[in-house]
Image 1 (tube, rainbow, N blue to C red):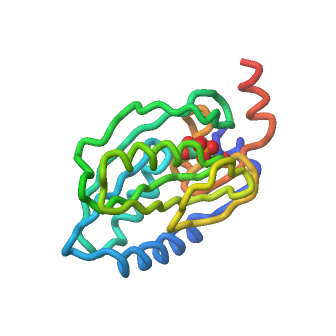
Image 2 (cartoon, rainbow, N blue to C red; image 1 turned 120 degrees about the vertical axis):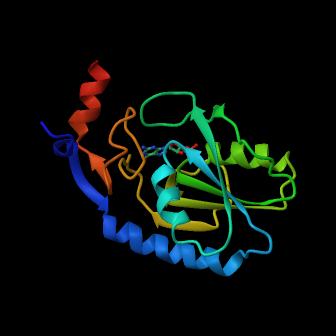
Length: 186
Ligand code: 5GP
């Protein structure tokens, strides 16, 4: 059976994603310039597709860097305990930084990254997130560029996984409940 048969419904279509990324890119193009090129930091793995589409719409010079974060705890909730699996290759001291995230849920992961980055003395830090679930927030975190506000549902696709799968699905969707039940029984 195709993995697409696991999907219950589409929440954000491919076209909606690309239209919205064009708007976010315009906002960024108005804020940043070649005089002081920022570093875009992609938070792996979930934000890789967002970063790839966003960077192609930016008209100012910029660098890319990557950081991989894992929150302890499995399945569909974040525990608030965060671990760095891959750190930045470059120094962000004195640099303008844009954090590129897939989704801000409770806010714990982003809060950790922001505190960690603040200790490295960047010139500025802004946050771009494709998805935002404000109803789930446990910690107040600043988000400057938001793709879509979504309801409290676990979503996958367009870089976001469920158990490391479905990242290649080109839209944001919700899985059928039995998909979670089946893997809980494994
Ligand atoms: P937070 O720390 O804000 O609760 O969670 C942030 C991280 O949890 C995200 O970067 C993402 O990896 C994961 N996450 C939160 N909600 C979802 C969701 O609906 N789907 C997926 N695939 N991951 C999520």
